[in-house]
Amino acid sequence: MRPTAIDIARLKRFGLVGVVNTVLDAGLFNLLTWHVIALRVLWASVLAGTLAMLNSFVANQRFTFRARHTPLRRVALFIVITLLGIYAIRPLILDLFLTVWLWPADRLQALLAWGGVAADGDFVRRNLGWLVAVAVAMLFNYVGYRECVFVPERARALEGELKNAAIDPEQQEYRSVDHHPGL
Image (cartoon, rainbow, N blue to C red; front, side, top):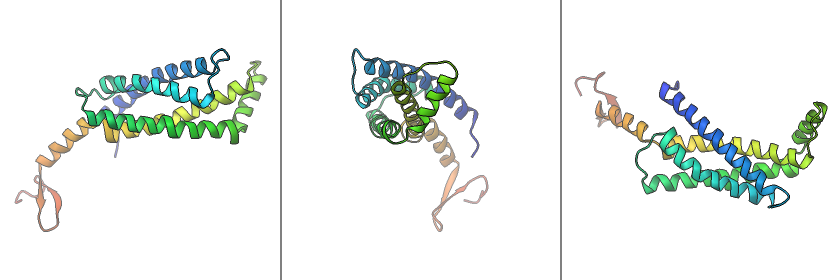
């Protein structure tokens, strides 16, 4: 199925909200892991992600998906999907980059050094792991929001299709009235 103009516009708005949330998330993450505050990396990621989640809900509801109402079900689904991204996906990927899969950060640090940029290895490893974790969680969130949380436009389109359809009781399938005028 090809994306519609609405899908493309919505994806662009989601990307813009994502950029704002990413800047907010990254700023908070680095502030919280800064030596003065020195929060543990995983806790800083979770706290920064939680604050960005609150911003994300308001921005995605009003701007990305242009939903007018805030039913409790929508809020609950949004929280569940976002929390899976923040508390499950992000820590797993971040831990992978901090303890197991070290070579991408080492290569990036070497590339930065070759370019004349001095960067602390821990800083590079933390932020590269954080960036990959956020990207994967963001993809998970978009699909979850589109399919489960902000679905009124898709539901209205489906209602329109169902009004133009009839059920064949023999086969329990939907048949279009336009193609079967005798139904």
